[in-house]
Length: 287
Ligand code: 0X9
Ligand code: ZN
Image (cartoon, rainbow, N blue to C red; front, side, top):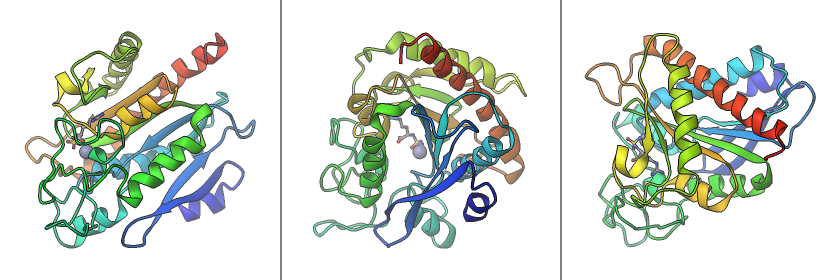
């Protein structure tokens, strides 16, 4: 990322948006259109869950594509490939299937908080655990983790400009929209579903991978304190999706390197469709 930012200094800026609990920098790539910095941003994050390595790889690949396929859309992209660097390193060095961060609260028995249960919107509700040894432990309090706070502060800093937020995860071939904390429909349920379906159709184009679009709570499972529930409640961003990328047959969270390119291609097809929708709304002066 440092190399790319240097080589493409006209378009890409690397920003440190925070630090993990073990002191690792959390880097964000900002990629601007050739017409200059835009006040419409699509934000893509990955690596919230340590073991979901395909998400980190797809985010890096996205940065590459954004730099090499110049478009005439006046939209800026923010790409955050490693939300949880401590967990990522731990999944390389100690436990390949580690999910959480690597902090330990004063009253906690085990290490690690699930970043995607640590956000301050319906924190601690259904689908989040109170016991520190559980994989979906939500932490001692909302935003207890520096990683979650870095994400929150970045979103709030760009709040008026955020038009779409995409969180990359695996696995399941799903395109999920809020809410996760309740089965009730989101106020923007209809457009979220419709654009989700449109993205899914685009994502099936290159090799037929079928993504199912639906609400988190009913399509996957109840989940409270998630990043995108919080983003959707705290900003005006019209589009918020969690993408559960495909797995390789029977290996779950472990995706073969040969799958990086084809999966990145599908995601790119979906994101281009999303960008078109954002652009369309802007031209109709709806955002
Ligand atoms: O449970 C999660 O955090 C995500 N699934 S995963 O297998 N990658 O862990 C789903 C997140 C759904 N999004 C919201 N809770 N809003
Ligand atoms: Zn995940």
